[in-house]
Length: 280
Ligand SMILES: [Zn+2]
Picture 1 (cartoon, rainbow, N blue to C red):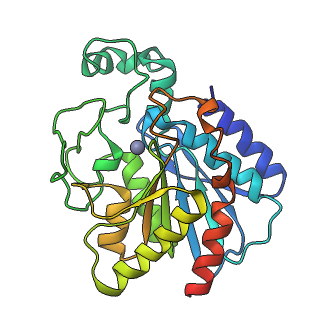
Picture 2 (picture 1 turned 60 degrees about the vertical axis):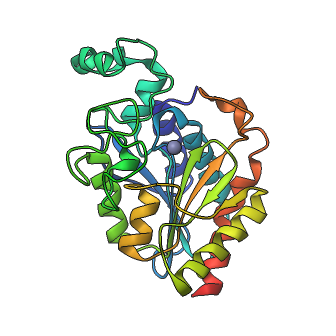
């Protein structure tokens, strides 16, 4: 099981190898949300993030593997990798509420009294970070207001430190595009009501990614709201993809073995930098 301290260890390894490592901010309980950067510092940048939904922590493994794969590559554009956007949630899904003694009782109550958090998606306050961005906030299919293992929208957009950190970092970097890793289904989402040329541009990028990975590209927003992709599309006007890795034949909870067959994703940052460079 790939835990937060494994990410810290890999961060040190990558730093020693010359990668730029840093923190975009801290989680609710104070854990650094780590980033890596590869390629040119100036010019166009791309942001790739994983580990937003706690039970999908295998996406953190994948994004960290991307970092090792990129370490000795020459890139036409800069790439920021944020492997574990929701470190508290990941720890909760892996180790249960005992990992957070001060708030364990409240978390267990939110979890319906169960000590099994392996299907938990939210952060350590029971807010789903991917429902907490300022994009048709609160209007999503399945959104709830009370703290929950999934789908709780939070008190207001960016109420959660993890959401605020990622939004602040994204505003600062002003990326050409973003990509969010989730699991599962082997699908690519790009659509959030953008029109005309923007829709055509974003769909073409989604198609290129879908073709490369052998995933289906899904048109329409399917009632999505408050997600990072949604916010990047509607507020920043940039292409933003949600990529759901791992076949739908698998089921949660997932582990590293489910990444077998997902190796092509390691080279996706290279494809994206070449694609976006051409579009500049
Ligand atoms: Zn997810």
